Image (tube, rainbow, N blue to C red; front, side, top):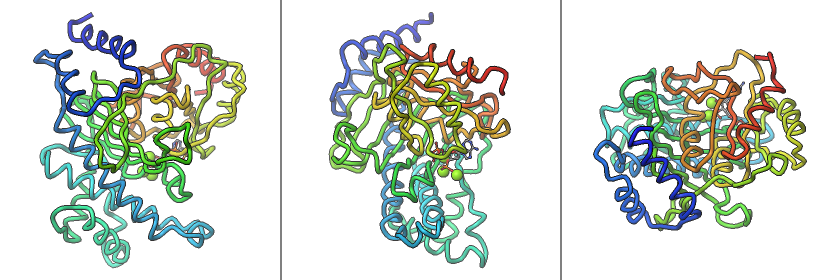
Length: 376
Ligand SMILES: Nc1ncnc2c1ncn2[C@@H]1O[C@H](COP(=O)(O)OS(=O)(=O)O)[C@@H](OP(=O)(O)O)[C@H]1O
Ligand SMILES: [Mg+2]
Ligand SMILES: [Mg+2]
Ligand SMILES: [Mg+2]
């Protein structure tokens, strides 16, 4: 094992043994991390972390404002998707312009592009988006600035250099239902995810108090552990998060997508049966599922392919992936391969996703492979 890996693993053991649910202010945490990892080859990404948090918080505020103004019973009964469209474009423009201000040379792989906002056909939507974006940025932005900011997300990604990946609203259907959605931002360097931030405006801060404070921001930098803080709160106090320590898969609870079209519910049920799981699955939209596993609210996240042609997108997984790893869990595809973020905008080398705490991961993977034998 290399010296660097050894140090990172030792920090992991230290963290698990001594720092479970450690509550530390951000500055002390940085100090602890820098003392333990005081070698020149480890990159702390301190500025990137702070900028990514600021970007996600601003975009989350915009999404909440859109929900309050535009989602009502009528839009719900008509299945009108326009509110989420407005929020999606606005959030991408806000995040991209914050990134541009601090890291003008970093390319971005973002989910959205400005096509639907252009020309006379896009005028109404464009005006709404420009107005919203201007509530969340420091310097006024013209319509052209906003379209340009959105289109900074057109980068192709790949295996060399650094780039960001953004899902301005993950769980668009959850957003419209007033349930879970997330603003997800990650930094990828040479094909490896190094930093992830997920803003979950509707997620209870403490799952044992579902009616308590809502709004969670989860963040992880490679080698530094995973943390949560209150989203858009005055305090920057961070709390270490860790996966559960369930050791017997039959006692595990699992979460899955709400949409049967995004994750195969019937295969998930077969796997649960094989593992002897009797608890009802928790269905939740967005990368909030990764956060639920990372902080031990659930033990397993299953996202099994529904159709063999669908290829997962990097922005749907990058931030959640590093947060799980840094919280002490594992993530692979259905073949046990790590998710490969070096292939461009998609996870073309992978099929499906499994995340779980490290104690039960191998058992879960074996059950997935038995159930899906020769299917994909
Ligand atoms: N066929 C298929 N299979 C798998 N995944 C798909 C599929 N089609 C779409 N998507 C992507 O799913 C993202 C939302 O995933 P969720 O887990 O939040 O689904 S659900 O809302 O809980 O049903 C969703 O992200 P958003 O568009 O950002 O909401 C899509 O990128
Ligand atoms: Mg998504
Ligand atoms: Mg999205
Ligand atoms: Mg989408």
